[in-house]
Length: 562
Image (cartoon, rainbow, N blue to C red; front, side, top):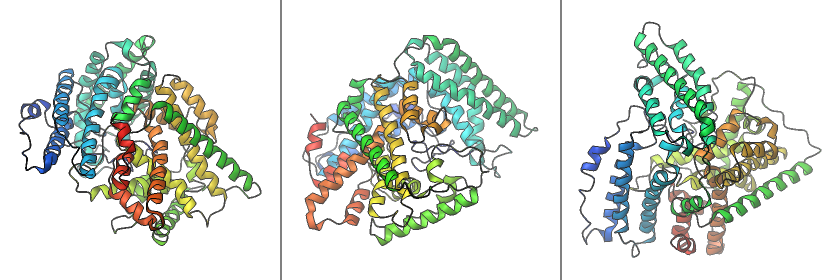
C-alpha cells in the first residue's frame, strides 16, 4: 500500500518512520532521575553545556510519550499528567539559564529548546489530543493499513508487514485495551470537536477493510495471529459505534482559536507575525499565484496541452528524466553545493510506487506530476529527500534531526514549496513546453487554498465542510478534489496539526524575505550558491532563527521576545 501523502509530516520525504520495536523508556524511571543534573559551573561556557544537557534530558523524557510513526501513543492519564509536571520543571530550569551574552548561534539553540518545550506545553494546555481528539486512537488503524502490504521477508512469519511483523503483533494484541482506554479518556464528549470525531470515524470505517485484508493474508496455521487481528478489528468497530452514538453531543469547536493560534505562532513556530498578518500574507500570495497562472495560460493559449503519461512505464521514465535534469541543473547553475551523499538513490523507487499496478483513478496531485513531474521532484527530492540526507550527516547536539511540534515545518515545507517556483525562475523549465509553467502555479494555488483553510478553520470561522467546499471551488481542477481521499487527508492534516499548510506558504515567503535581506546586505558580493549552502547548513530550524544567525538582524527576534 503506497500512500501519496504529499506534504504530510508523516511522508517518507518529510519524516522517517522509526521502528515499531524501538524501546520506549518508562516515564516513571525517567522522572526518578530526571533532575540529577546539577547547575552548570562557571567554567561551562557560560551555561551552554547546561543547555545541551537539559535538552538531552528533555528529549529522553518526551521519548516516553512521543509521536512515533505507527506506534501506540501513551494514553495513560497518570503518565500524561506526570509528563506535564516534568515539563514545568524543565521550563523552570530553562528560564534559570541566561543566554543574553552568548553568541548568536548559541542563543539560537536556546530558543530552539524553548520552542520545543513550548510545543509540548501547547499540546498539554490547548490541543489535549488524548482527551479531545478521537483520531489519537483511530490513527493506529490508518497506520496498520499503511504497513500492511509491505513485502514479507524472513522475519515476517507469514504476515506481510516486513521487518515490522513482530511490532505489528504486539500492537494488535494491545488494541482492545487501547480502545477501552480511549472511551475513558474521551468521556467528556462535549469537549470533543465534531469535526475531529467525523475524521476519526471516517478512518475507522475505511480501516475495517484493512483488517479484512489482514485476516485474508494471515496464515491459516497461525490461530493466535488470526485471533489478534479479529479482536483488534472488533475493538476498533466498537469504538466506531461509540463515536457514532455520541456524535450529536460532540459540539466543541475544532479550531484552537485566534488567541491560542497567536501564542503558538510566537512561542513554538517562532513566527514574528500574528494571525491577522498571516491571513493577509496568505491571501496576497493566493492572489499572486492565481494571477500568474492565468497570465501563463493566456500566453500559452495557442499551444497544445501537455499529454499526461498513460502507464507506470511512461511515468517511471518521465520521473527519471526529471531527476536527471534537476541534478544536472543544480550542478551546472551553481544553485547549491552537491556533496556525494546528495543522491536520489534511496528515493526514486520508494516514493513513487512504480511497482504497483496502474490505478484506474489517480489522486489529485497526479494531475500535475503526470503532465510535468519536475515540480514534484523539486519539492519531494530536492526539498525533503535532500533535507533528510543532510540531517543524517548533522552532528550538532541540538539542531540535528527532526523537530517535533512542527517547529521546523516552515523551514522544511517552505523551502520544498519554494523550490517548485524559484527553480523555475532560475531556469529549470526553460527547455520544457511553456505549459509547464502553468502547472507550477496550479500546484502553488492548491497550497494557498489549503493554507487559507488552515487559517480560517483554526479561527473557527470555517468548519471542516466549509474548508473542503472552498478547496473544491477554488483549487485548480477542483472537481478532482470533490470528496476525494486526498482532500480528506489534507484537511485532516491541517485541522489536527495546527498551522501545517499555513507554515508551508508563509515559510516560502520567509525564505524569500531572507533571500532579499541577505542579497541587499552583501550587494555585489552576494552569491547564490554560498547563500544556499549557508542556509542549508543552519539545520532544520525556524527561518526567523536562520535569518538572525545569517544576517545578524534582530528585528524579528525583538518582536518574538516582547
